[in-house]
Length: 144
Image 1 (tube, rainbow, N blue to C red):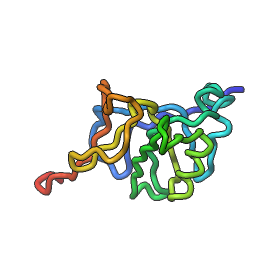
Image 2: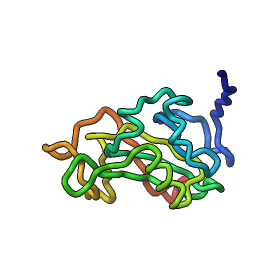
Image 3: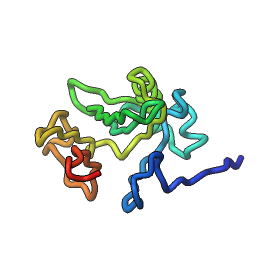
Image 4: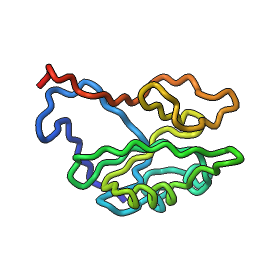
């Protein structure tokens, strides 16, 4: 089956020219519905990834796009099992996510707030060196 795709390179309200785009895989919440169960057939994931519990990193937006949700799920530890994609989708819908995307998870699942690590990365050595990150910071009052 084929599905139409629309690529939007602008935000409403307009926020200027986009210079960076972050990707993830797969989508787990679409229009307020958990679509994690369809990830294998629609997004091309596989059961070892989708149905098994793993540490997860995800992003979501509220229906009005006024709230962004950054989620880190610990796993592969005695005190945390992680989540399947269906469980992640259920959790995201439960906290108010209307559109939600799984990011790279596993040992790279790390959440830092105000310079402090607030989750427990699954690698025995702790935080993993990664090639990219999503950063959120307060907008300077001098910028429009």
